[in-house]
Image (cartoon, rainbow, N blue to C red; front, side):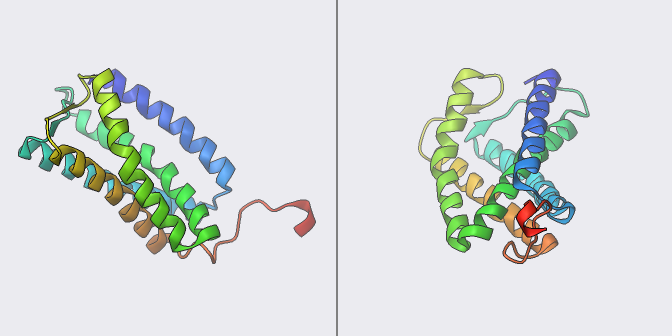
Length: 172
């Protein structure tokens, strides 16, 4: 993976974040809570990558520049913040069951997504054979959603008590 590729996918995720901010009508407090969740999960993801590399389950080669790890971390943070804004709206509407569906969904969808990306871009990530890498990837995705949402909840408060930033003309 090159520095330019990290910047490209980070920019795409930043655009996604802006769109999700608009459509979820997140307040500043909620957006900052989601960013805090992303900051914590970015560290967790780097730890999971390092641990699984040490166990030989996968490899994520980063560019040799000293700032590449910081760019990768920032890109990871930007990529997960939209998830917490959507889980916030889901929990606001469906309660903890909605969050449980999200966690189960990413556990199922995450590994095939990563294996597809690894097959398409082998310089970004390489998985070892066996079931352990699949299971580790699945558990990592579950942690990404659960931990990030929990941090956002701790910083911004419960989803059901949150007011929306924009209101319809009927409620004004």
